[in-house]
Length: 125
Image (cartoon, rainbow, N blue to C red; front, side, top):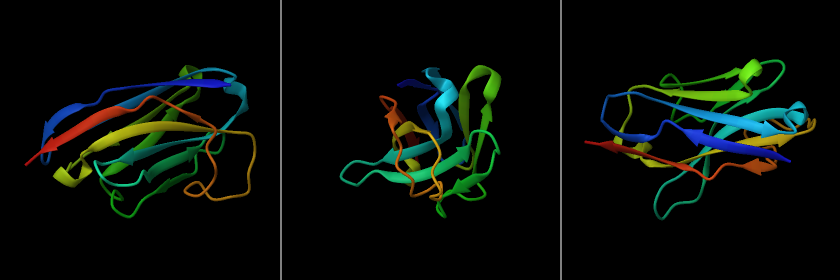
């Protein structure tokens, strides 16, 4: 198994920036991809962004393209989500996830095996 711990959330004004981090531990050699999801109050959890661990290919939800950037540091087993030009509608609990083992599915639809506890991001207007 892989354990995931998120950090970097908080409260920011609209137009501001935050960087989320997710540190992985455990069977990190089995990581194929890592992603970020979010869940706003009263809404379903939705895909935000993901990155293939070895090839660094990325994917983004349309709602965050051009504003969010995902990256990873393989030496630190950490994935980052740089969030710029934040909007009140970005307010949500953000979850880090890891896919263990190969899949031919796209980053946004593959099944993720391990999940972090989630971290709150609040954007005030």
